[in-house]
Amino acid sequence: MGKRAPASKAYVLGVGLTKFIKPRGKVDYTELGFEAGIKALLDAQINYDDVDQGIACYCYGDSTCGQRVFYQFGMTQIPIFNVNNNCSTGSTGLHLARNAVSYGVADCVMVVGFEKMFAGSLQTFFKDRTNPTGINMEMMMDTVGLGNASGAAQLFGNAGREYMEKYGATANDFAEIARVNHAHSAKNPYSQFRDTYTLEQILSSPTIHSPLTKLQCCPTSDGGASAIIVSETFLSARPHLRSQAILIAGQTLSTDPPSLFDRSAISLIGASMTAHAAKTALAEANISPSSIRVCELHDCFSTNEMITLDGLGLCEPGKAHEMVRNGDITYGGRCVVNPSGGLISKGHPLGASGIAQCAELVWQLRGWANNRLVEGTGAALQHNLGLGGAVVVTVYKRADGGVNKRVEDEEVKRVGGIGYNPAVEAKGFTQEQVDRVRSRVARSQWALGDTEGKVRARF
Image (cartoon, rainbow, N blue to C red; front, side):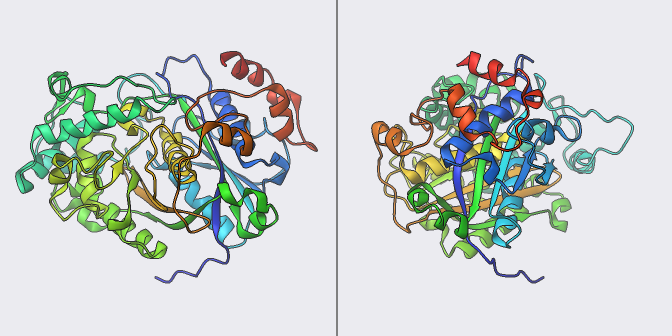
């Protein structure tokens, strides 16, 4: 299978986030997408008229929700695509945007992910047709049986049990992963949960599916995230923005091989496709896993973080638990994993999660995440997984080829487009700012409706 070399480099020029919140039905997807998108346009310091394509990322909602969100920015008649790839939906949108830019189809693509979810575990809505992950559940029932927890908790919990049996990890190791992620989230203003816990509190929280306890499982969430992906040509025309642009140096979207059904619980959660995607993306970026000092990975459950550390090559095979015990997944250790707090505490609005990971790493590499910065790094790794299956692994680098350094809030305010440091403050925007970035030539007040007023009222 051949792959043509990209015609252009692709950069993340702007990012925007909403706070991730409990799904209580109080905020609609139109508001989540609008808030995130306006922030990304402001951060990129462009107008919606500069956008050549739009990509909307969501799992729960009717067809063309993307158009409903994008029409609020403008009705410029650009192509708008709606993407659903389970939990990797947001990163799939980034992958499509990067391809469009890299191969000359577009110079500027806007990706907006949003999710309005239901409380509780993930649900299946179509009862009259085959569930795409039902075949995974059938394999689980055939190998280890069926328990009482949600299907996802059983799949990932069983994988954790297998890792314990094969390599000697303990329940404490998985709990430590959750403890670290909750500790990291305290400094992320967008996190759904910002409480910190002791190891004992995590272990003593209600058991979901051993070794998983409640505080080791990500919540369902409402939230939005957006990113602006641009070409070298687009960036060269705006040289004053190069210092904030982050290069997508390597990226792979991978699906499952036949080993998915080799009767291993670890294989059944997509470990093989993670390993393949990581190897391929790192090779494209010409960087080794040992050079990665900051990583956002898909910790839907603490057990998946353990297995993913292994799959990404951040440790020797079967040694992820030793990495955890040595303190090598947090500040002062080998690699800071999930400085945002990860899905476990930041939250997991499916369509937005992958783009939120991107935003965190952009802020890290710019040096803007000054309250949680992994300083002196020039590359960052992202992993976003969806059962069914798809995984996207991305390597980001600074556009100048250098390493990051701490940037103070006043400097971010001076050079940025939103008027404050969005990496450390989850604030809003003014009516004047909205007017600045919405389309000048094809805006519709009817399409916008009362969304702007609802969004700004929350600020």
